[in-house]
Image 1: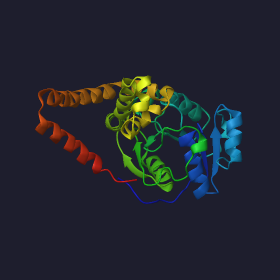
Image 2: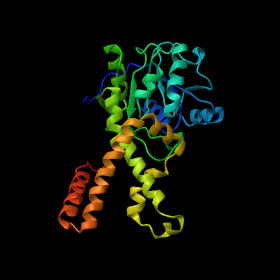
Image 3: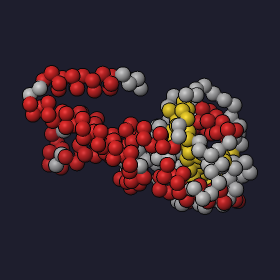
Image 4: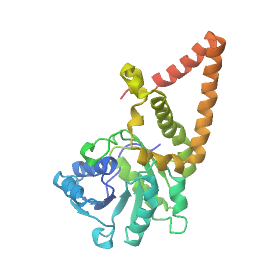
Length: 284
């Protein structure tokens, strides 16, 4: 795991998709490195204008083209996972020097890019965010002391170092993994929690919602996230998500058996293991 800070070398950063994550990257750069150009690319001209007016961007464009990308730029794709590969291809065609992303799955993105040079794309996943969307919720410190996984596959070491240095410069702690290991881990730590939260939320009929308390609200908070964003994430990491569901089913079956048989000793032991694991997380 790599921590600390490295010298910031970027003169221009192109962000494709100026939402919560893209907007927070822009905010972090504008706050820390005023000399760096931050160019936003998206489809909604009015929102890009507004993001510029709010100081997040130095320039913007509604299309990925060589005219919008200064020489030597670092490109960062912050789009839904099923749109990342297409944007990477466009950035490659437009001459972007080096490209990364912020998506929560990696193997399917690399697979979609198998026929193009992999040397100029290095996948990343900053593990930060919220159920909110839009640059209105951008936070310049969103990545401070948060883990960012970098997944070099065929990249040169100098380019990997550049991507690592970028994330560290805005406060991240960086861990390198293979794309498949990233997807396996995130299936358990991110994708399964969303599935379980959705299941819990879906189990309670609408007419019973007035009877819910903080326990229900806390455990189902992430179920309020965008369905259109999460559907391609879960389908794009299907194998590992199914494995994580199988693991959850096995543990749920053990709880069911302990409750059915009145096995207080086993039930208390399982609850205590889970409680201790949750307590071991650092308070934020």
